[in-house]
Length: 169
Image (cartoon, rainbow, N blue to C red; front, side, top):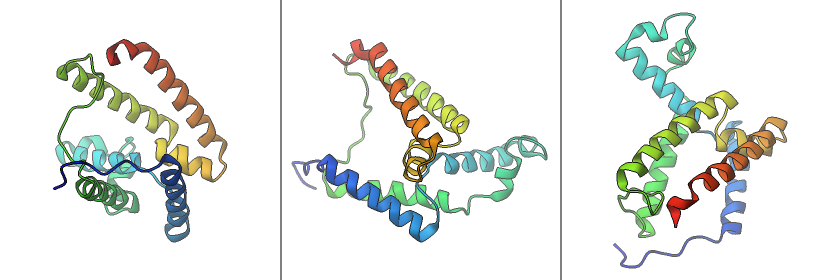
C-alpha cells in the first residue's frame, strides 16, 4: 500500500465524468442514478423476514417486498460500494475512521451521523428520490422536481452548516 495517498481529482474533471457516466447509464439501462430505492427494497426484504405483517397486503412495504432484491438499483448500489472500495484502496486512501465535526467527540459524531442519515432517508422517500436519483437524474432530464430538490438540499445544507459551525472550529 502507498505511504502517501494519490491526490484528489480535479472537481471539474470529476463532474464531467459523473455527467458522462449518468448519460451512459441512461443510454444503456434507461435509468438514472439512485440509491434510496435499493435501501427501501432492502428494508422491505428484512422487514418481511422479521415480521411478515409489516409487508402484508395494503401496507407501505407490500409492493416493495414482492418486487424483491433482484432489481437494477440494488445491483447499482452493490457495484458502487465495490467500486468505491477498490478506488479508495488503489488511491491509498482507505481507512476506518469516524468523520464529522472536529470539536465533537466520537459519540456525538456517531449520533449526528445517525440523526442525519435518518433525516436524509426520510426526506429522500418523501421527495421520491435521493440526491443522486432526484437531484442528478431528475435535473438531467430537466424535471422541475429535480431542481426543486437541489434547491431544498442546498438550503438545508446551509442552514445545518450554520447551526453546527461551532463544532467544526
